[in-house]
Amino acid sequence: MSTRIRLQRHGRKSHAIFQIVVADKRAKRDGRVIERLGRYNPNTNPATIELNFDKAVDWVMKGAQPSDTARAILKYKGVMMKKHLLEGVRKGAFDEAEAEKRFDKWMEEKIQKIESKKEGLSKAQEEARKKALEAEREANEARKKALEEAHAPAEEAAPAEEAAAGEESAPEADAGESGEAAEKDA
Image (spheres, rainbow, N blue to C red):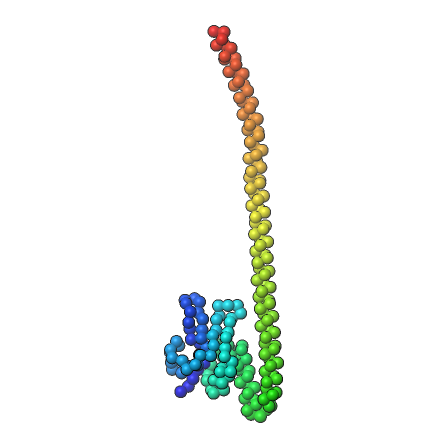
């Protein structure tokens, strides 16, 4: 029986979460599995990977072939590096202590890379948020100016209209008075 390390899809439409499993090569994608090794969530940034490292190394050493995506995940988590070092120990190139030392050094470098990526993402997100706030502030100021300009001519025109209306009513008042005087005379 040939075994394969691959992904088993779960989750809803357009929001998949995958189980990393060991299954028979002939089994369906979401069919019967031999063992579950972990989870992979590509929806987060960076992707969230939970993996039982020792079981994964054990299955890879037994000869389970990972699929392309599973191989990339195993490389990212260091399973393939660990396998490489254990093969070197088995062949006698170096001892197990040296293999552990090399693996620890590699893992520290990998963790630093991941942390720097996370920091870069958080900084970029913070800068984008600041730019959005600044753009919103500028848009609000532009709206205020436009409203002030729209109300300013209306306010200037209102006193002029009142003055013009006052002048027009004054002749009517004079005409009204003279009309009243004409009625008294008659």
